Image (cartoon, rainbow, N blue to C red; front, side, top):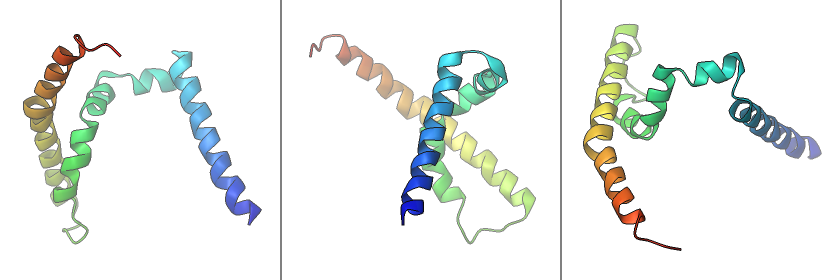
Length: 103
């Protein structure tokens, strides 16, 4: 029973410390890799990618590689469009209202 509690806790602490070192360190291969333009771009689209992958990656879909590549392209295009036409305007709108609010 103790093993079932220790392993997930140790794993979570290890992940948190690794992320802290990568983010706070601001140097090294991992930091440079995670901050390359392509991954930063995907990071900005991450919520849209999360939302749009569900209709395109069905569990019973064809498993051939060509089908998968087309579906990944469709997910990216849907996420990119969703981000630019919905998320970005709402983020701008949010910033307009934030300036006048004091908490």
